[in-house]
Length: 334
Image 1 (cartoon, rainbow, N blue to C red):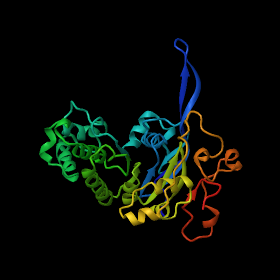
Image 2 (spheres, helix red, strand yellow):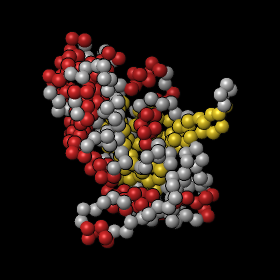
Image 3 (cartoon, helix red, strand yellow):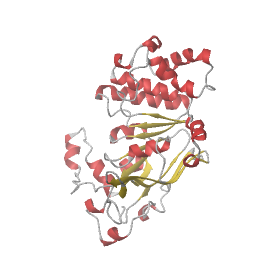
Image 4 (spheres, rainbow, N blue to C red):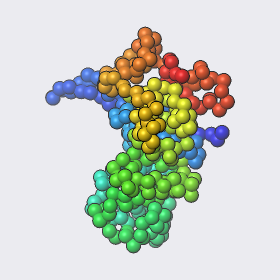
């Protein structure tokens, strides 16, 4: 097993809650990310799934340095990004780029496509000499399936799928090793989602990219990911290969998510048992004690309110071959 290219250890991000007008004081905190640990290996795609508000996008912003963590480590090839100065972080970010969720707001409407895709060269001029940048932009547009002659057009002249391709071209401009994709197809029409997903899968193979793919669509994650991490209320509650997660989920929350996925065959749909979760997701400003999922879990017992279960291999699979990477944060994982 190759060494991870990106290591996240006990990552925490709390946003303060304040009161007052003239004198503001902190009265609490929103625990958006609350102790996340992940590994990303070279050439791997790690899918991150969960309900809206579980902390997926905050993790993405932390990985690329758009947010500073409250605690924890983000190590890229052994270098802790959370401890770097602004100048050192800008140099390191060249190797970790991001594709944003909304292609309508992530592109500057006042800039041409050529300027948008070529802007990273202004920040990192060592990547492409000034005389080569226009040629490089044309190559990038061609790589993502756009006509290179479009470089003088503006974002409003493109469809949603084409705009997302422009965002992907911009992310590839600096030849990064890691791409962070924050729900890159959720704002697109169903008809173009598959095109963008297939494009990203092809680019990953051609450029040898490692990818963190964040989504709430379980079918999309299954198609593109090698491993899958399931998040709930700022924590990773289960992680494993996509076969393990989709065929043998061990955490009750993962089981409930997968039970809600539509099945094409009606007969199969009738045989499958739908798990209905009671209650609402607790507020990240006031999470429950112990296991974060216990307030909605049908397996919850007294120990779940007292002890937060660690992310570990379930006892039922502890001796199984190849199960060492399938971990679940549940006292009753089966």
